[in-house]
Length: 320
Image 1 (cartoon, one colour):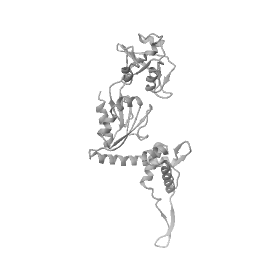
Image 2 (cartoon, rainbow, N blue to C red):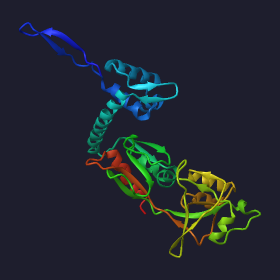
Image 3 (cartoon, rainbow, N blue to C red):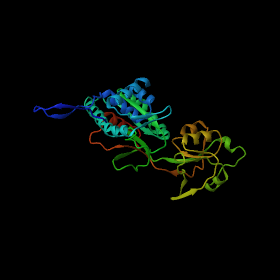
Image 4 (spheres, one colour):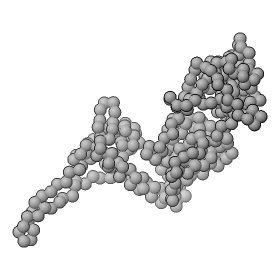
């Protein structure tokens, strides 16, 4: 960042350097910079701020001119921070977060929590644990907005700008708090009635080796979901085979409904398809126990009212 220096004379007539303050950058410009740095996308930042992408681009150019430094490398396909931009963002983002938290704490005293709660979760967790209760939550807290990002990755929720994450298991970073959300999930073997046209239904776990099973990874290129079963207190792993592979459980359920193979999914996730008869629960004497989903968030001395409202509501709604 460049500083402007002019030469003047002191009271004794000698020359002295007078350092002038850098041109002022107003808070709206800094907020716009932080939003673009968080999204790495001008259109998404504009949507969050309620302005046009052109207005965001113009504001960023103004801030860069005021600071006399380029903050972003921009092409037609990508946006990235320059070294100077990354340095500014590393200092600015925590400061803005502190301001937002302070405002949320003030609003908490009014018994009317407000603001936006940003959540990162998988689609499976969202559909089973959040979607059934989101309408009631919004009705209970009319001043709170909810922004949900769905993926299967273990995101760094703080650096990504999220307030809370939901994932399977409770192994989180040391500065995170984890609370169980819902019961321990049970996996069952499912298939469509049409799949068994011309095929025998499996009667034992070993019979699965004779069938097309729909495989699943945790993420693109990630490790497999293992088909582990609880058999009389012992864990039995079946090394199934199949030509269809997905990294999302909803795709496994959809493929099973279409008769493409046998799936191994959370019972609660497939209950609608099971109730309608699109899928059948087979090998009912065998099931697999997984872990429970956990809601996690950064440890804070003072939690924003909007976040406390969301966490308490969802924990109560999904009490095991």
